[in-house]
Image (cartoon, rainbow, N blue to C red):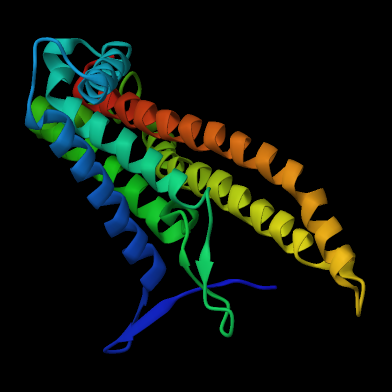
Length: 248
């Protein structure tokens, strides 16, 4: 059973419809989470406010581990946004997927399993590091970083920038895509009746029961993978930012 990405054709341009839809869903979830959690701030916070405050402190520690707070404090909103967006996006495809049975077009999935979105996020982060590198160090100081300590490092540093962009996005995409593919395979096995042609209801029931345990285990592991990849993405974004805004 081959699942394909749902697409929209508009004026000759192809858009990944499911990725756009699920990105919107992830954004709405995050907006509601912060809106509800910060609507009535209290000195004695409830569970949701406590969780959000812990999350901000977690991102603050990520920044402090890579640059001084005087410089990195301005990136706290970026770190929190990246962490929550990537985490929620990774989680969306875990409980279930929705697809068209006739066309096999997937509509509900993790948007980060689309390489276009994962690479767009990484490109956004890398471009932002260059913008702040110029803004905070000036053009001369920014360009000097490419020839320090010796000018012969220039081509290697350009290659490093490209490699950072590719690995940041492809690491996220690869892990989430593999997570969803294996989950689809387990579910397919569960409804296949062991692939026996003309199998009776008991065979289908037995194959479904057989698939339950590995499915539950894999979903639990997928939560770990999704959480870890969200942390790695936010952390590496701050690492790359530190390399551009602070002198090393």
